[in-house]
Image 1 (cartoon, one colour):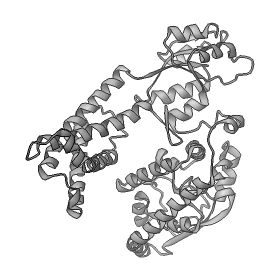
Image 2 (image 1 turned 135 degrees about the horizontal axis):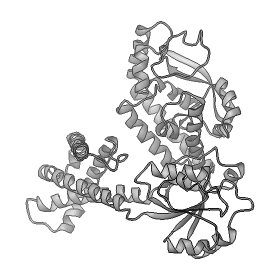
Image 3 (image 1 turned 45 degrees about the vertical axis):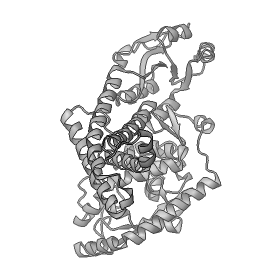
Image 4 (image 1 turned 180 degrees about the horizontal axis):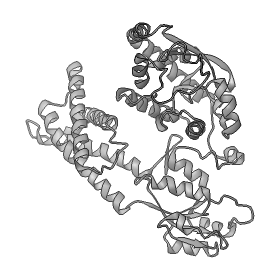
Length: 465
């Protein structure tokens, strides 16, 4: 894993995205060299068009991203892959054509633009087939060994098994000599018992990293053997930290307070706070100005659809557990909680109005919260604010739940883009894993990633219930 800002990223995935960007740049550069009306030195061509080519790279990769081709790196269907790439290149061409219409100085040349699409398609397809081969053959994969065979070890193996692109291959599991002999629980991964000669075992298996995932470490931690591995160049990482870096969430059920206290993260410098506030305030003001006609239309549609106020207000818990008033477009009946009291919204909730279904799906019901950001009650990105009724209950049953109030709540957040809509105590635990990860590793880069993904969710209509 490498860190971009404060966030963990797979080396292989990062190389994939950057490599595809380079190939797109080369595709346009080659088209520029071959389709020039007069012979020109390649170096001179690149000097003249590199900035315009970079524009094509950015637009094309954004279109690939919005078409989910950076979430589904690999496709089980050749037709789906070809269709996705054709759609992305086609949309990129339309977007670039609009840019060229309004800013003619950015155009790279009609024939070069058309010719580069052929190179683009060929290069992107080739790169993705090459990447599929890399994953299938497990090239550039870190070979790791897990120490322990308990719940933490199983959690790690389960998460790694969910993604073929994790970049990590668990080659061996080592547990106590007098362990529970639970080899069958780890499928095809070899299991050995006993911590003696751990370094020799790691060397024989070509292990580059050891993941210490012992549920109980007192009296059984093989310090001497692990130290020998460490000084001989084998990486050592505790299971909780590996889980965090591999999944983008924190395993709150397994960690203890000392892990949170002594781990990196949770830094909140005045400069970082100022930049976060400035970015959120600027975005909120601009969006309020440009989206005000849309908000007027939404308010009118709500009034026509059902009786009651268009704007719904409710007390929520914010930073440092302070109470503030949150604003939303009303998406439920005005008397939604008259008979049932405070409850989470469920799938196909009968209390949701016709207009409410639409604005919730597009997340347009959140737009009035721009005023909360302007006032300073909320940030643009952060954990979602919760009601006091639920907070009181969740504090008793969800470990570390109160720590999510160390930062301002947000209109969107890491948990919102990573976890499906939650409507239970179990979902609250699942979302907290992501919220705590965000609070621990939050940065401007992470906020931009969340905002970009939220834009995609809105455009593709993948909102909440």
